[in-house]
Image: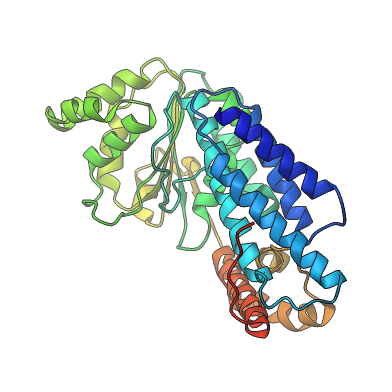
Length: 372
């Protein structure tokens, strides 16, 4: 039944999108269409229903069609949803679909089951939009080469640290390489764990890391609970057995302390080519690596064009382009104020985007999307 409903909603969306005059946000709708096709093509048993996302997508598309008709007939749009609200809704749908797609990929590659609640913590998703990443080409090649090192013994194991200040996009670099086709083919399983402090969560410890790794490997919560009764030794032994004989890749994102992660690394099975990548702000983590060759230190971007591209991607994410006057006025200020920090450029772009959309809302009044 679910499959029949999904098929009907997909065809309804496709027909409305491609028949008749082109609607606003057409490019973003076609991107979502491609993502839907990718999800529906998956034969994974973990794929959850995308019925709700399809309902929402059809509603938003109908709102855009109504706006287009009113514009052609020169009718007032005061009772119609604003472009700002439509853009926000499309962003939310895209995020939800990407999370579903990523968990499908993870379930196939790490034998994990699809969690009931998708994590929303920083760095919990391994997906990254390649078209919106700038200035990392040499760093990606460097990290990928270290992981796949031509000529290294196939049974060797290693830990690599990505070190840099806040906002330097250490996580993004790890995500880019984690999702590389060559890395996917080389490592199985691949496991991503965010160690950023969470609300109502105790300080990150060896036990927290071990439990998160076991969860990503598909070990049931009640089993982890029974192992936990044996303390850290039992958790590490269970983790060792889960990874024994496997060429694993583990990413520990946002490591704040050296002792917990290093104690876990000491207990992981060696000899089958397993690797661990750590992202951290602290130089102490770099000191625990086996030589400087296993450390990547990220610096601010030296190419000013990269930060401008990051800023511009944020401002133009709904397809509304900057004009030449805006570019001439904004570009020097963005380049100077971002100081080579990608996240700074992104935040500046978000602020400009929000101000522009808020101005649109102010011009058209406070609008609420209608049900269709």
